[in-house]
Length: 494
Image (cartoon, rainbow, N blue to C red; front, side, top):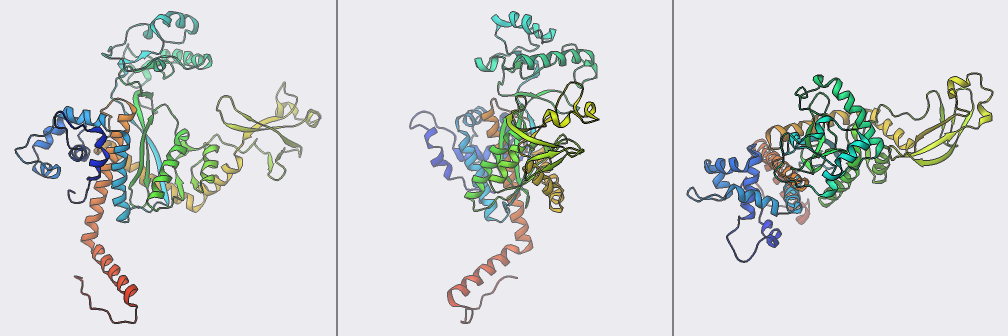
């Protein structure tokens, strides 16, 4: 690994972070190599990492230290991680990805995207209300949507509040707070049945009303059957050829996957284009489904293989859509024409409204069952991107779509399991989303480097590398001298 990983470019990249005077700083190449050792050995504590490195001769050789040479302090590792910008870590990730591309491990045409929550370095016991102290009583009297436990001090008071005024303020409207009020009542009734909520100090928490003073960028999130935790969301893209990670980034855990897909795809396209690769197929699960995303991917020239939500319908049941005239036909043969486009105030998605005139439905014998008790005309809305939905559904249900589903399940999900269980990403040991992003990039760098070394070893053992070299030399002589001319006799060890 020492001879393969060339990090000399870091000296020029990190020069702005070093001064001309003062105490000697840690070498940037040594810093990254020590960090990679931590993720390869699944050690997330900087203190334990330095102790581990000092006991291993192979690691000392890798980082270029003598057996009697003192290693950097663990605090130096932490401070240097905070000092370097995210772009430095992304540059190292891209450099390792280039090695994988040159080795033929990345095809680029099909990318599987998925997300997973990663535990933040903050406790739920330190959560505090998003309302300033002088407004708390007035806010509780007005909304009365918070549990009784919120009126008391946190179970574990934070030593230092790292949040700003915006992160401490309530951003939800009255409707959102009223929903929390109902959930709070339900929580109190069946509290003992909830995971890890049987203790008397448990309370219903929401990102709309609570924040973490320890790590304000961390967000409360929950998976079915699991307790609420403060997490970050890791968005991961994996090439389906040899399971190489092509993109990774940290997001807030309260965001939805379909809100982040466009940012992921744009970043992924730029990175693959720089490597001379063409991105063609985008494979993801239902969480990334939305009409806006389907339209975006088509505009980018990509094929989407993203199953739609089970709630999606192309219109009312038993109604037939006429695409040419853009209207629906009800079971009795009546035309329901298109009337307008609008933005749904709840979901913020673009929709189309279809409405029949009052005279069309007035003599219909089953009018009450079709329209309801008070409605005078048939009216309904359908997503603006119905055509994009339908084209995606055809691809998902095709033979290629079923193949892509299997590739996604066998590609990106095992990679996430490896990162979280064996490569130091089970918990973020830093504070802030920028630092979390650096941690995720380091874990992905270690994973790709390990993949590269294993792939290179397989080529040597199978003789493929030798055969490829022989073919390359043969092609070069044919290009220089022509196939009919006599060429020097070449011998190869196989």
